[in-house]
Image (cartoon, rainbow, N blue to C red):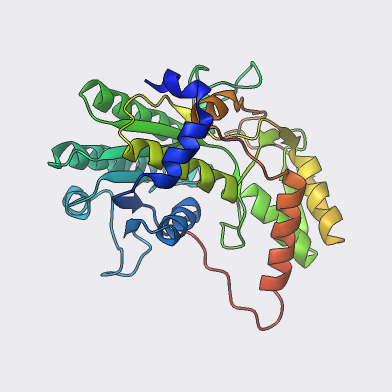
Amino acid sequence: MWRQHQKEPRLIHWLSEVIHVGRILITGSSGLIGGALARQLRRTGHEVVGFDVAAPRGAGFGDVTDQGMCMAAMAGCTGVVHLAAVSRVIWGERDPARCREVNVGGTDNILAAAHQNPGRPWVLLASSREVYGQATVFPVSEDAPLQPMNAYARSKAAAEELAAAGRRGGDRISVIRFCGVYGTTGDHADRVAPGFARQAATGGVLRVDGADTTLDFTHLDDVTEALERVIGMLEAGEVGLPTLHLVSGRGIRLADLAALAVEVAGRGEVVIAPPRTYDISRFTGDPARAQRVLGWRAHTPLADGIARLVAQFQAALAPGAPTPRRPA
């Protein structure tokens, strides 16, 4: 069915705007993407159920490793955006067992809860460009082989296998792979783009783990827009969405990204370190499928996004400014 939409981006955009979105559960609702998506959906009149271990008890608290909590939270929902995860490569390396428990076991619980729910809600599963591992053909398409090379990537690939099994069983499950999402001061300090922007804003040291490592980054605003379109299609009854990755299609060396942050801020020191053994050295994705299926492409130039982020850090870190909230 998805092929019909390849030539109809205007129809897709219309659907995403006019179809009433029902009660949607967002796991990982306190995180970078989950928080932004929840706010946007609520602004446009959607009902959102938050579910996150970082939320206060009684106010959207939920643990995806607890199947009973997953089933209870899903009551009355028409769809689930499953973002909850051990979301950092380095965290997965430090505690691979916990990474698998949350990312694979938690996904299994969410899929089982959706399958057992009488309303059979659709599920949108968040994955990562990390599942491709070290690709050799660029730009990387969604059909590239999965060759995960770290614990986090292996957990995401395993979660995708669970999704594929669910689809074979008749469940409506779609997969979105994220790629270098950035855009707020509340992000984790060890993520590359916000880490560089913060250090540049404060005149600190920007440590580059692998100067020639080349990655593809997408701004949070663009990602949120794409997710809204996907949700609109799923609420409209779409059953054949292919796996999509949200990429800009433009790679940048980490040394150049650090230099860009320093140039924008007018200060900061770049220090080059060896690449980490569990990181990929190069990734640039092919945005063609997302553009065909969703009528979407990343609009925010990286230079603009980094400039905005540096300015936000400068304002947030000024004397008397409130401390930015970190995502889960």
